[in-house]
Length: 166
Picture (cartoon, rainbow, N blue to C red):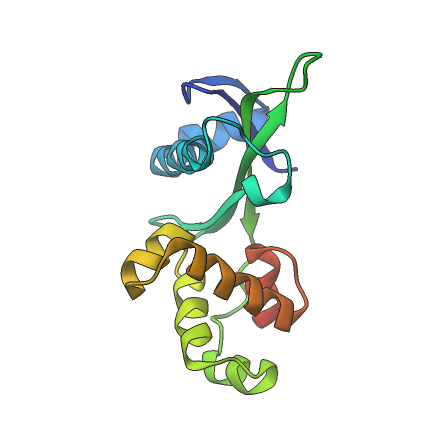
């Protein structure tokens, strides 16, 4: 069962399930990263939050104890008008078997040099924004590279990507 957290548009926690409560108590820095991801969702387009998957932000978090978590945050509709009033975050533990063999992934899925750089940063848990900063590219370009990598590997999420490459 994933940890489920709901935040209002001020990024104040309004609800969390038992798993999220335990996660917050055990990994306070993970909770802060979840809040930051929610802020990125909010700031993506505050005037008119999109209702599709493009409004989603994802990240991989590695705790100090080397436990991996996949984090997704996105707008949810509330009320009769269908406007977004909350951001939901889902946090799931990733079971790590072994590290990703980047050279094998490059050859098997025909990844470009840049895609390999992006993949390495995804595996390190960086968001699209952080990948863009690290590689001196635009955030949309980082998102496009991540999307292309996932398409080539045949998965739809970063957590599934890492899992498929292990």
